[in-house]
Length: 298
Image (cartoon, rainbow, N blue to C red; front, top):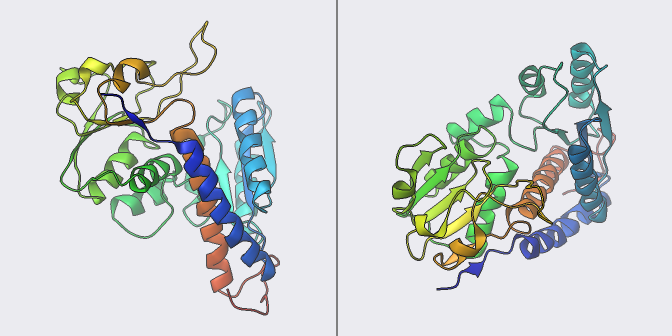
């Protein structure tokens, strides 16, 4: 068996093309979807990632600014910035790029952000709304995974899914979204006893544990769908690798995401989509980029 590819790069392009049409319609009504980001200046990987997000946002007609924080930034300054962004009617989405500098309380910052502009879907309020199955922004990476599975018509109802990883921004929300799609879900992690045996029972495997190439092909049930949400830098390798050993898993799985080019592009596309949703909601309320009536209908 040779697995088919769950191509996140291609679906991300399609998603962004569709978002561009929606953004153009909003701009005609006087609303420019805007995503503002707070990012740690001393984290080159985060800064580069934010630049890529902003590039894709600009390509579809969105606006936004990045605020860099560093080891001199105080918690008061951070919370003041969040309060200003929350109050600004021209800002539709706010992203707190993890990790923030160590002297800043990231949990307190997420609490201050709340759910209204949390287009990354990772604040306690947003996660609570997901748990309660209430409307709200969903975590961008799990949302991207679900859209990737849906696009490729992967059946979920009644299937057994194992999510390896329990983080609040990936493993737990991914499990909840799969549960809402009527899969039977088990959350596992690096300390789960007999993990390979558990994974062999799964029709769908989501690897999100943060250990390079931990999941091997002989862990898999033949025909399983493998979603690799891991990104790991390994010395001597020319590119990042996932949490699954791609070569061995691809000989057993029916579908598999590559790393890179699988989950990552869909994370960004889902983030931008959430921000466009927020802008459309503002339009429906009669708002514009300046917070006044746009004089038209959305």
